[in-house]
Length: 154
Image (cartoon, rainbow, N blue to C red):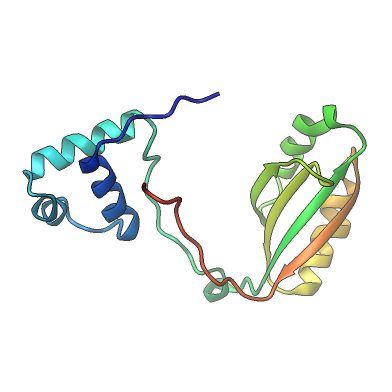
C-alpha cells in the first residue's frame, strides 16, 4: 500500500491552483501564495519527486478529432489469474484510454473512444471478444460527460 504524503497548507494551495489551470505561471502562484517564485518552483519539484504530481498534459477533445462515441465496457474473465495477460492485449488496442481492475461483477472495466457506434461494434467483436480469457463484455455508451475533475485537495 502506498504511503500518504503529508501536505501543508502551501502545498494544498499550490496543488489547487495548478490543477485548476496547469498553464498558470509560477510567479502568479507565488503572488497568490505570498512566497517567492523560487519557493513555488522548489515546492512543485518536490511534489513531482514525491509522485504527488505526475507530469502535465494537453487534453484533447475526442469529438473535435472525430471520436463521437465514448463507451465504458465491463469485461468478464474466465479466471482472475488471466488478468495480466488480458491487460497486455488490451494495451495494444488504441481505442482503449483507461483500464481498471475492479471488484464486483466485472473483472476489468475500460473506457473506449470510437468514431461511431459501428466502429464500437468493430472494437467489441473483432478486437475485445477475440482475446483469449474474455468470456463476455457489457457495454455502456456515454451520452454526455457532465464533468471531469481531479481529486479534491483537502
